[in-house]
Amino acid sequence: MTGEALVRVLHTSDIHIGLHEKLEPPEDHKPLIALEAVINYAIETKVDLLLIAGDFFDNNRVKEPLINAGIEQLGRLNVPTVILPGNHDSLVPNSIYHKSDFQHRADLVEIITEPDGERFQFDHLNLSVWGRPHVSHDDFSPLTSPPAKGTMKWNFGIAHGHYVHSPADWGRAYPILPKEISEANLDYIALGHWDIFHAISQGPVQAYYSGSPLTSQSCALIKLKNDALSVEKIALKLPND
Ligand SMILES: [Mn+2]
Image 1 (tube, rainbow, N blue to C red):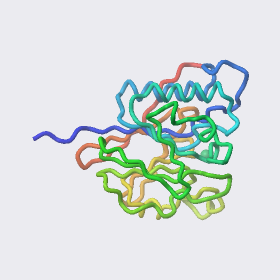
Image 2: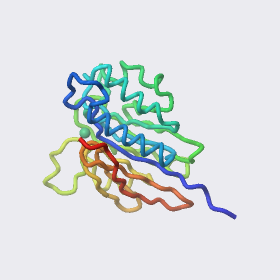
Image 3: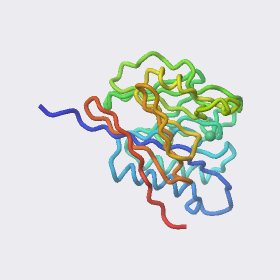
Image 4: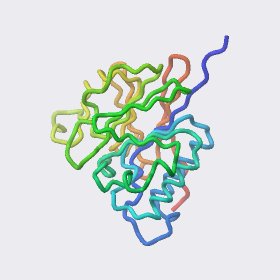
């Protein structure tokens, strides 16, 4: 008897398309080059799912050529992508995700939009992804009241916020507490907001910041095989400046 097939999930965050937007062709825009490196890696290594844990866009005023170029990059991928809106690309009324017809133009892209949290299920991977999006500029706790354990074998979370690791951190916005991670009923939490790769697993739950492909040029790769979940840091190849 052979084991189950290996499932591979690529986790990125904080790409910040539109950061310091200038009058330049979209292909010269550094965040877009970083996104292209992520998509290249995902295609070359045949990942099964891409998770973008917030701040895909730098702001909601990004102009159309860059939005279109970002959607075009996502459209190169033949596997599902889940995008969680972060504090920079929150679901305010004029959000890019509302105004750009995003999902019709990149049809394997799922955007988490339910303010109280939403779970997408991928039956062919026996995997679900739950997250709570940023919907305004107000503070909120991304991992408060996650749902009961899902019915898929693998239940992932996706969250954009600040891991509160010491009392001095308590005043920070979008807090994520150690207890919220350990009690989340999730197997893995894909985190965004910090731009460096960082492991903050708690109890039975593995949780990582992937780092930003733009600044730390890293991603997290999650491998699922039989009952084992392992995580590795990926160093992306970006063209030289
Ligand atoms: Mn952020």
